[in-house]
Image (cartoon, rainbow, N blue to C red; front, top):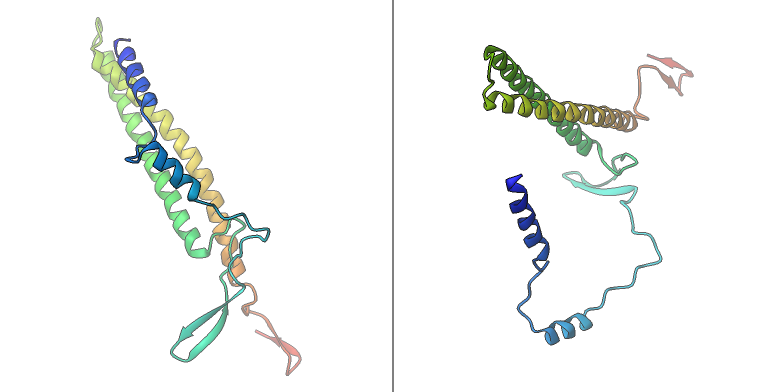
Length: 180
């Protein structure tokens, strides 16, 4: 309770500070702002990546199709990075959950060792551990959902990238038969 007043004073000071500072006079700033014109938005939508791209290699210039993208606009390489980051989030949330369990275990174990009065540090262990347990659990749920969705999108992109490549069974047009 004694820190609440100080915290509110700091919040009031931060809210009262100007959002930006400038070394110009008010007249110069107004004149400079009036000279700036923003371009009008175009009636045409912003161009997306072309369907075909030119690729330069030792043999010359070749035309290759652009890589497939998810509905969100990510390529396969970007999705691999997103999956790896979701795995990191899941692991760090699991670590927080584990650390919270350790804090709660130590706090409760030591609190039962003292029959009459429980030292405040053990109560702090329990509350800290509870906060870590709740945060770690929520992080694991959120990261797990993200990981599942991103893996599903990545696998869909992999199927799209390999769509049209020959599989195990092909139809041989010249001989009019199936080729394995």
